[in-house]
Image (cartoon, rainbow, N blue to C red):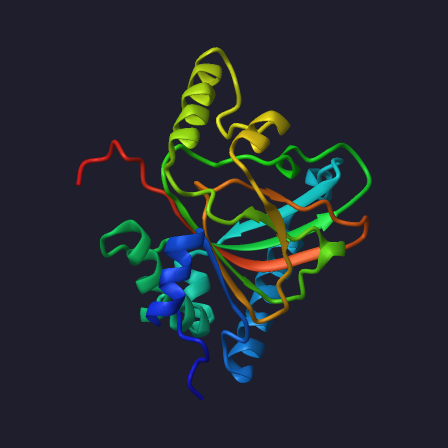
Length: 239
């Protein structure tokens, strides 16, 4: 059956441009979703079977992030069908302003555990230039699971945002984080309104991670499972 809520619809793309983030529920038909969900857990199981258990993190967050290989794409044709579809390509090309080919596709499985504070739960920005990410959730991501947090509209280049970027660049020069945190003072200065983005299974989230965002704090024992697509091009590369 045809895919619902195609993201090439102008209304969806306008939301993405205006807010920096758009969510599309019931993205795949049920047969497509069941097929791609099965592929997700097969790839995850194959990876874990080869992994030394001593590699597991002792922190509050244990993340399995497995980059898909050409062999994975060949083994599971549904991956090619969905992630190289015109709809996905159009949304990424729309933000970048040119036709691009997405090659960074991951199986991302997050397991919340007792332990140290995860630094990504603080509000931050990934880079000083627009970059795109998308997640197709294969399980529900509710408040208990530590959902994605985003301040809608924070991707816009304003005078206040430029002041923050200048401050972050100076701090980075003297040894600060490459993904600068946003302090409470700067959050107030930037008028941020960060919200939890709860996502049911079979939902697609597309985000410009130049916007201010964070990982939610999940309850110990909960998990979050999604395919992640990423595109990040340095502004200094030759066109």
